[in-house]
Image (tube, rainbow over all chains, first blue to last red; front, top):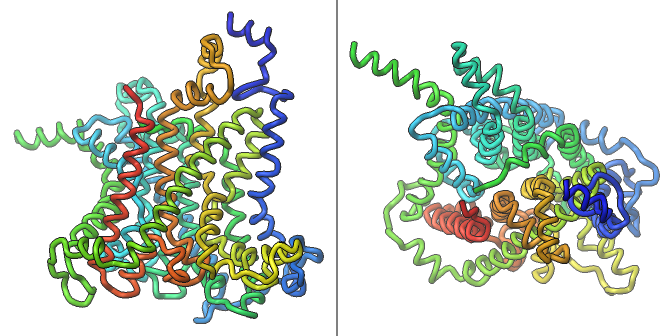
Length: 301
Length: 303
């Protein structure tokens, strides 16, 4: 009772952490955040603006930030193009969509089953496996590009669809977040089901999965970002042009173009970048509250 | 019969748990454990990917420490400069912004969080077109045009090809996208600190918000702070390709933006000295572990 009275008496109700409404003392934070977030948004607004610019505005000197006469020409140009080896752009986009869809689903299946065992089952190696996964949070995949190449070559995965999917699936952060969130599911619920004779598979599918939806959503976003934005796998492990991703095609647009070609390609590259960026944004907006509730269990002890 | 029932008992007790982890464990071993082990093993060999690896002991490491002029003069100092600024700098920025956001009501907080997080949704590589246009070397580049019109410079500057500016631009680009998953974790953690702790502290003489942060907020959310730190370290080292992306060449102009990851690619994928590249990879992984240990010291929970 006392703290509540104290808060009401001193009028600090809307001051301090996690306030419920507006208070004058918050003004200074807005003064700081507004210009900063404007600055942070500049590159993204620039992409949006450039993607709709007609050629004369892309070439304009002095350069102008905002588009004046927006046009869809860059997008129609992008999709009427072929890569140098004759693969239509739509093919790259289709590859990316399919790869991302399969990877996200497979990642949820693989990580959530493992998280169920690590969180709710009792077995000898449980603590050890979770500790190993926690150390692997520090794993930097880019450091072992070459040995990974050798492994993928041995497995005969080069130039296959699965080379896009399999290496991404074991994602230590994903398993970590799922397991931490699953720890909050009360054991009594599971024990009650076990008493009723339910199998592990049934408990996993009918009880645990529905209760950890926020964590699944978070894993889906992380996997989506790792896959949808991935250009390295296509450039390192895939030679077959018709198996490469849209992110890879975008990287060829920005690295191969030079001189006058670079300016001509700039509008198309901006359109492609926008296509890359928008799904990230939309998915995050839809799932953000679930992500935040997962993140409050992210602590590393 | 005896063994069969023992097997059945084991299966009903532990077996299904192993079945549940098996898929993840298999992929984890194949794509994380084996490559790390292979890198370690190859680092003690001479391997040009044509002939089988030949064991040469520590010679790769000795060469790295004593003969690799480029590594010692450019790559290592660059990596240290880049990671010290981008790692702790980005982390401090992420925490500060998370704290500031936590002082706002839910709706504006969510909107600002979305804006600050949006740069990390996509990778530096995907945003290359933006940076290349903004920092374009001729007068049509946005930064050049802006500075020219203000009269601050007289001739356009080749930002991305210039050894003087490349590193700075790399750092700016990285800081721009440093509000990632660790930022979200801290943003979720700060409002969960028990409010009564602050009230108790104010009665105990904690008088300003800065003291509050260091005595209450950070100690109460050490696990999230540690998670954020680990994510910041990994993101810093994983982003090694940024200099090559911006300048468009490996090696970067006069090695100005050459980081350890580029050095690995330079030796492994361009010169095919894979044993040597593996030794550099091992050094990189050890650096990550070292920094993670430092973070662990800072934020380890006592219990």
